[in-house]
Length: 66
Image (cartoon, rainbow, N blue to C red):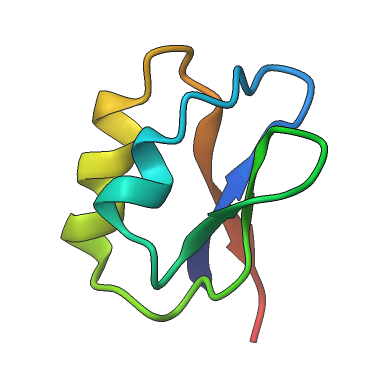
């Protein structure tokens, strides 16, 4: 099982902290919220840092089966 980051779009406030920290994984979309566009472009610990620092706790790990 693999973990990938996901953003709860209903909770995202669009602060952009994730996009500033890991622009190779996260980006802001026209709706003013963040999305994960490349979930494997960073190490687990780098993504965990984003998860830990999100001010509204909208970034989470999602388990996917290979």
